[in-house]
Image (spheres, rainbow, N blue to C red):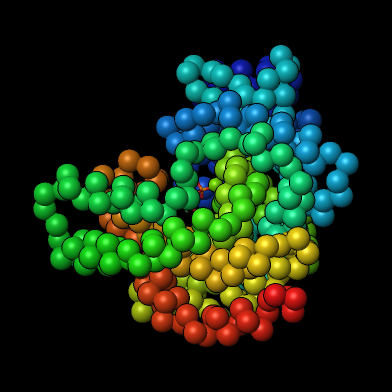
Length: 353
Ligand code: GN1
Ligand code: MG
């Protein structure tokens, strides 16, 4: 962070002097922890090539704030602080920034503990329950068609046309992802009978801040993708990111697998967080969610690789290819375990269904 930005932040938010350090492992925004005499804050540089409609985010978050006013939420939802001029977004030298209160607690990148996975899933379920009465039409898509699996599939088909030379590994991945058309059809049928809701859309464990003892969630963060979507997306991303033996960045392929015990804990936790008002089709769709979100992220990573790494931050040039390969193995394993996961789903879903 250069000096002129530091001055601007200090005066816009009336912070005096502060020190700063990089924070977090997000693939999209640049984030810093600021330590000032007035307390700790999080400054986030906004990635406007990914989030092309910052004003939609600001509008969604202000609806969220008023919709949830007076509701007892079991955790905090940190919203951007206002500048001295009363704006939630700071513009400086052509870039956008936001400041948040820093929330004390523990963030974790992954877990093998079903109990912790259940606590995380319950928090995201409780979020969907809290927003169930929100006026859906007030919420805009902050990234259009973000989780439309069918369109992500088409984007790969398009991108592949422009690539002239393919390694054997790339061909293998392309063939695998294109062979997922039955899943795409299943997805298209499923969404026709699902109600849209206001959901989080990025339900990784590192978007939660836990209490020191890891016994509860104190805050749910990264609210830029809060927008209309299906429960299947939020639950599916929990499965993709938590019910896997290896995270999406790991490359020890033979160890990448779906972990049924964590899947079960996630399902129980999510359903308990959701409470009563869940449509029968929504419950059914949870079973498909993991495959949908794993295929979606695999398609997105692979498409980005084919296009030359224009979207996700990479640490080496083959990283998006490797992420796509990791997701391919996880997806394949989920598909092999369909019967087992269905048995878990049958014994876990509420009795009235
Ligand atoms: C991106 O930057 P981060 O980690 O919050 C992406 C998510 C993906 C994730 C994969 C706006 O999120 O959809 O699940 O990377 N967010 C956006 O690691 O594209
Ligand atoms: Mg995010």
